Amino acid sequence: MYLVINLTIADMFVGGFSHFHPFRLLSLFSFDIVKMNLSPELNVIINFLFPWFPLTSLTNIAVISLHQMHATIRPFRHRLIKKWVYGVTIAGVWVLAAMVSTVTLILEQYGKEWSYGLYLWQ
Image (cartoon, rainbow, N blue to C red):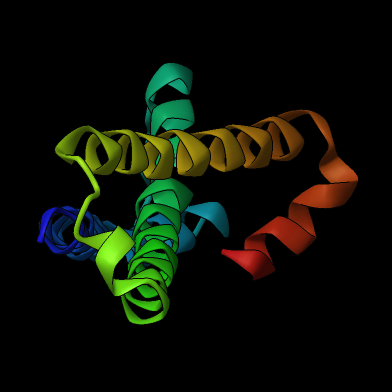
């Protein structure tokens, strides 16, 4: 139940933040119609958040499937899982997605030859 609530929160962030994505892509190609003059710090934060929320959602879906597999294979041991295990799992999902998003941001900022592949990946 906790993992499904976490997935709901992650999907809410994905849906709420995805409305700005077309404007971000248009501003990358520097069309004069949509010119977003953002400060460099705000641009870094936005570039961090765009891959973070979808990665959190996808990682949480993978954790839910592993949780259900564990419940199917070992039903009695699954009943003995404590609540703190779910808290650690949820924190791990968000931290893992943040680490991948940070690596993406670093490669995008400092490794210009990687940036084209990262845009395709996002």
